[in-house]
Image 1 (cartoon, rainbow, N blue to C red):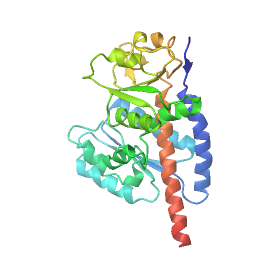
Image 2 (image 1 turned 180 degrees about the vertical axis):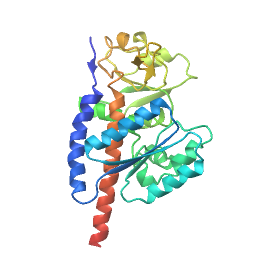
Image 3 (image 1 turned 90 degrees about the vertical axis):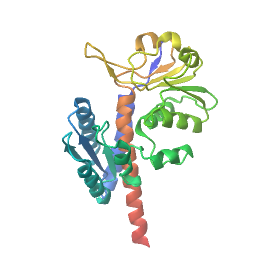
Image 4 (image 1 turned 120 degrees about the vertical axis):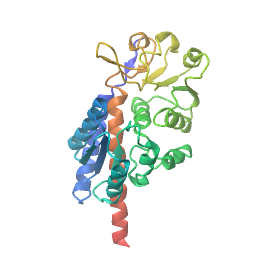
Length: 291
C-alpha cells in the first residue's frame, strides 16, 4: 500500500479561487475583506509566516495591514493598536503572530481582540463555544484538517481518532472537532503511557507536538489516515514533520506531507475566517440599512 497524498497546496488553491470571487462581490459593495497582522520582534520564522499571510491576502483580493514592532516594545503600545483595529471597519480579522516576547502576557493580548475579529479562533470565549459546537471561528489548523477529510471523502463517524498533542491551538480544538463529527477520540501527550499502543489503534491519527519524526511506521495502523501538523527543521536545513514520512507512507491510506500539507491549509482557513467575518459585517450592515 502506498498512501494517497493529501495535497494542502492544491486544495488551498481550489478554495482560494472561490474566496477570491466572494471577495470581489464584497469589494463591489465597498466591503472588501481586511486582515491586520501584528508582529512583535524579529524572529525569522515569524517574519516568514507573516509575509506568507500578507501575500495570501493580496493574491486573494483581500486588504491587509502589517504592524511590526521591536521585541522591546511596551505591551501597552500593542494593546492600543489592537483597540484601534477593533474599531476599524476596514479590518475584519486581527492576528497576533505567536510567540510573543517574554514580557507579554500572550493570553491577555489574544483576549484584547474583539470576538468578531478573532479569526485565529484563540480567544477563550471562542474556544469555549467550540466545546458546544458553535464557535464564531474554528481555529485555522484544525479547520484545515477537517477540510482535508471533507474534500477526500474520508469518513469520521464511528472511527477511532487519536490526537497526539494537547495545545489550545491545535490538539484540543482538533479533538473537539473530531468528536463533534462522530469519532471516538483519544488525546495523547507527554504523560501518556505506551503512546505506540494508542497510535496503533487509530483509524485517524493527527500529530501536533513539534518533535521531528517521533511517530514512526511501526506506530501506525495499516490503512490509517495520518495528518502531520508538525514543522521541524533538521540540522541539514531541511523541513520535516512529526511523522517519519518515509516509513509511514507505505502503511497509511492517506497522509499529509511536510512541507505542502497542513501548512498551506492553515493560511487558507485564516482567509476563510476573515472572509466569513467580512460577510457577516456586510450582512449586518445591510440588515441595519433595511431596518
